[in-house]
Image (cartoon, rainbow, N blue to C red):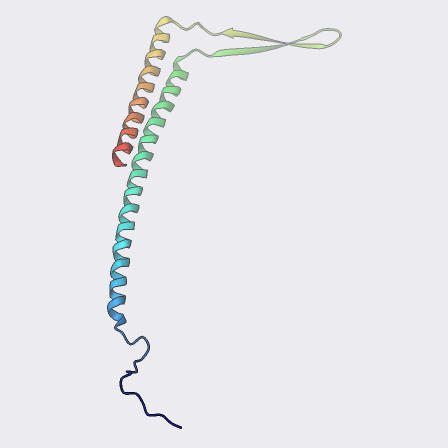
Length: 135
């Protein structure tokens, strides 16, 4: 009932091939991809930092311009008067200007806004050009 063993068939162990070599190749590939991802991540971080700094500078210029204009321009004061009549109270509002704005003040305001908006436009233009170059 027993049959003779065929000598032409070799019996091998499962997974008997050299897996250490394949493991090393896979680890090298993983290191290569990790290095590429880290390089891209560093590039993204540096670009985000650069754009953030430029946005802060532009925002600071706009805020400074706003504060300077508020300091230089005259204020408008509102006075409220309550007048009592026999039947019902009436609230009247008077708007009085403290002083009128001179032609020099208007010219300075116009010049400051023109410079601030022009500078912001140039910064935005440079940002767009830089982004197109990187793509």
